[in-house]
Length: 115
Length: 114
Image (tube, rainbow over all chains, first blue to last red; front, top):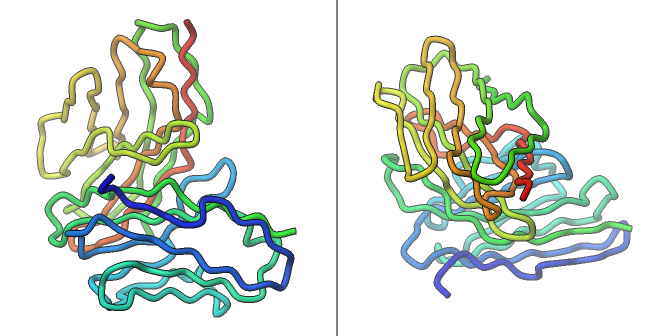
């Protein structure tokens, strides 16, 4: 399968713990995006990378959130000192460079539950 | 700031019938792209159809077509001959030309009645 993969698919943690999600994009895609989706809402943009450079971060991304994409391949999204409000589905997507199509290819998401 | 509004949280349609999902957006840009994405239950989101704002012709993809009304900032999705596999959340989305992020609406849950 050469699609976008995310790990873990489900994570249950206690408030105050740190969690890390991993995303492996489609191999030839140089753009990688993180979105957050809560129940009944559409995906909300968090941040995106072009290769290893993080080009934009949403105001939603508090200082407890950090994302990296070393070497422009996979990406990690870490949430420190989790809060119950962080419970959501975290979606990763990738796309080819260039602004012509803009099609995002999504993974199945990582669902976070903070108790 | 650009916004995308989907006013129908849920809709139902009889199998084989036609259904139209509504979407409006707000932008002051002239260069932008509009999308409809489908998110089946417990599966990843996939692109259904895309429309470039500079194109007057409405996009079509098999049973899926859009009604793009640029002046009204309206972008509805028509699904013809609805099938059980069309049951999903449908998200309308917007991307400004020159920007890389896509902004999504809140979605419409579509039920297909057998």
